[in-house]
Image (cartoon, rainbow, N blue to C red):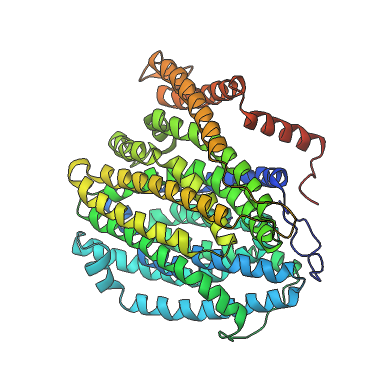
Length: 557
C-alpha cells in the first residue's frame, strides 16, 4: 500500500485516458516511489523498534500479533489484494475508454458493496472473538493470553472496515497514476502506532498498540480523500451488484480471493503452530519477516505499484510486445536489487538486529532468536520480489486464475513443509517452508507466463509481433547479479572477521559499526563488481540519476 504526484494525463474529463509509462518512465516514477516507500518502511521499522523496546519477544506481543489473523483474513479476502487485482484493471479500462463518469460509478458501487460486506463480517467476528481465539487462532496460548488476544482483535476488526474503504481509494488513485497520497498513508498509519507504543503503552500496556492501529486506520483514509477529490471523483449511493462492470470485478476477484484465503490459512496455521512453541516464537518470526520485507517493499513493491497501472493500460491498448518489454526490463532491475539485499540480510543478520532492536526488553536472546528465523527468510527474498512483479502481469491480462492456482498449490506445500520442518528446526522451519514454497511459486509463474505469452503471440493492435519471455536474458542478468553479490559477500565477510565482536569502535558499539560499515562496503563492492561484469542496470540507474538531477520534474508531467 503505498508517492510524489506522478501523473501522465489531465484527470477531469477522462478524454485522454491513462497513458502507459514505458520502462524508463516506470523506472523514473519508481525511483520517487522507492523514496516514499523508504519513508513508509522507515516509519514501520521505527514502529517495530519501539514495540520491541516496550515488549521484546514476550507473550503479550505474541497475543497482539495473533489478534491480527482474523482482521487480516477479512481484509485480504474482501478489500486487500483480491479487490486491488480485480478493480484496478477494470477501473483503468473504463478510464482508458474515455469515460471517467463510468469509472467513478464503478468505484462508488464497489465501495458501497465492500463496506457493507466488511461491516457484516467484522461484526460477526467481534461477536465470536473468544471462541475463534481459543479454537482456531491460538489454541496453544494460555487462557489469559486467549482472552487478551480476543480483546485486541475486536479493536482491530473495527479498523478493518476503515481500511477497506481506504484500500479501494488507494487503488483508484494508483490506477490514474497518482501515487503521492497513497504513499504517505502507510507512514501516517505507522506513526499512529508509534504514538500508541510510546505514549500509551506505558499506561495501558499492549492495548496502547491497538488504539494506535485504530487511529492509524482513520488517518490512512483521511489523508487520501483530498487527492481523491482532486481527481474529480463523483460518488453515487448505488448497490447495483448485477451491473456488468461490477460482475467483471467480482469474476476477476473470486479466484484471487480464493488464493489469498489459502495464504491467510497458511499464516493462521503458522500462528497455531507457533502458539504451541515457547513464548516469543511468534514474535521472533514476525520481526524476521518484517526485516525480509524491508528491501522487498522498497524495491519490488515500489516498482510493482508503479508498473501495474501501466501493465493494465498496455493490455487495454493491445500493446502486448510493449508489455513484455516492460516486464523484462523490470524483472532485470528487481533481480539486480534483491539478490544483493538477500546476501546482506544473511551475512549481517545479528549486527543489523542488534542495531535496530536490541534495547529495553529486546535482549541478546531476542536478537539470536530473530536472526535464526531471518536467515531462513532471506533465502526467499528474491522469489518474493519476482512474484510481486509477475503476478501483476497476470492480473493486467485479466487472468487472476493462474496465479491463484499456483499460489494455492505452493501454499499447500508451504503448510506441509511447515508441519514437516517444525519438529527439527522449531519456528525456523516455518520460515524455511515459506522460502522454499515461494521459490517454487516464482518458477511456476514464470514458466506459465512464458507459455501464455507464446500462446497469445501474434500481431497486436499496435502492429507489433509479441515475442516469448526472454528466459536467456533473465538468466544471464540474474547470474551476473549473483556473481557480483558473491564477490560482495566475500568482501563483507572478510571485513567482519577483522572487526572485534564486542566493545566499541570509535565510540560506536561494535555490532552497530559492523552493520553500518558492512552494508556500505557491500553496496560499493556490489556496484563496482556489477559494473566490471558489464551489467546494464548500473548504467541505467546512473543515467536515470543524472537525468533526474538535470530535470527534477521528469516524472511530474
